[in-house]
Image (cartoon, rainbow, N blue to C red; front, side, top):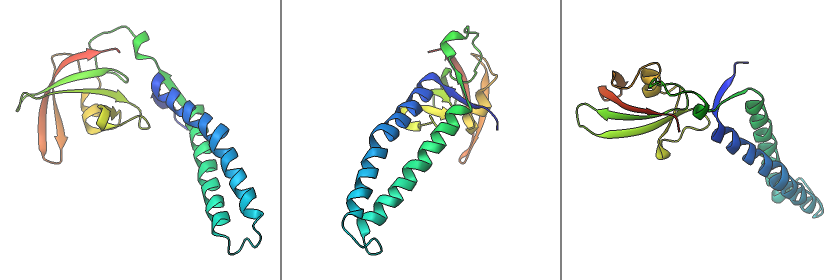
Length: 158
């Protein structure tokens, strides 16, 4: 399996979720199953069925996170000397050449991507257009509404 690129904060968030699932959610669901079993007939016990489904979800999520962390390539962008070039983990300030609107995005792994906090996946069309370019370059991004030209205003290693 290929390495999964991840920032330090992304890996920490996954580890935190894994710890919560193992230390809080797993014991809670085991207790709920035990309580539902004590009620008797399991065939018609909705609490038992729900608890078993939730247990399956939690165990699946634990395996998924452990798999991602075992294949993670954690990249600390602050340890990489700034060169003005767009790479994984950097924060990029863009200027839309049509509207003069300024946008700021951090390029992160798939699991960390959240457009609401300006984090875009390395595999998104914008990030793919930006990677390898430098400050001052103009990039053309294909969007559903057509092509948009952006100028790279700044590349920050934060």
